[in-house]
Image (cartoon, each protein chain N blue to C red):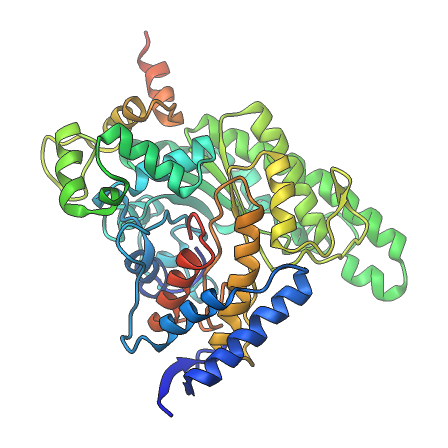
Length: 112
Length: 353
């Protein structure tokens, strides 16, 4: 992204063109770009297929809030009982079929 | 003729007619095409830019479904830092800052970064950075990079052990300046690998090499070699973000994989970044404060469109203040920021910002 005050930079770009992070499926699409070098269309298609939705639904809060709750992938508001932090990431790694470094580290730590 | 509110490259608000803006789009795209030896934007592209600029709403956005992934630089410094990084001075810990970005700003990804935001100063305090990354990874859901600048400038006197090219070159000591830079490259590679491997052990999802090339071709050479090593020896994701639109030839003769680094533009830079193994590339196009935003954005979109077409990896264009067509102004004007966002996504077809 770039430098600028928070309202003028991450908030403004997020509103104009961002996927919406864990409000929607932004983190999931990002992980496919990061781990498989997927371009945006390919990454969205991959995640959409895993979630059984259309690529356009990935940035639709109304669709994604329900899916994230159902699959327990972590949601943006603070709801007791929902997967938090690394708990959510462990489920995301499983869903997307990728390795997440911190999740692997946790598994190594608890394998005693 | 009807006039529309727009901006100059320094952020000053001006009024321009549609014809005046179209003329600046044409001049901007031709400037990029001439410098980069790339295709100018098509008439269809220019017409779409005009649509974006003549939208009388203050804020514009991409069409639903066209959203892209956002990666960040400068980490949480934009919250707790000072003016140097457009920071707003809120006394927060870095882990709190990551939470704010994930949960209040809905960031798709984020990063941890040292207060100096350069690799070299991290080396002596690496265990503190690892500790912070380990703790952050427990609570974050979004992917977390460790972000830092290669910043080869810190390896030259008086900050580092090697002769300063800026002192040596005016004295005509060109060979000495080159040798100092070559030594700095070797040290920087070792430092970046050391720090990145430690962050991998701490659970980082990736490394963001930010403002690559700030100290010229030495900076880029060191980064590419560090990336190559990290992609061979770790599972880290790597993003390489640039400092400027072309690589400055401070050394002038450095090469990577047989290609001279000095003078490369984004569509050429990305091929080397891919060869090194990086996963995401963040190209930069500088803003000219004396020209209109129409000129600047058309020029930036021209360079980035060529880069996107040349690339096989995701392109996350830099669109901070002063780059990517956005005016050089610390409090970025929202109308300009959102127009640059939309143009980069829908005309240049970037994969992220």
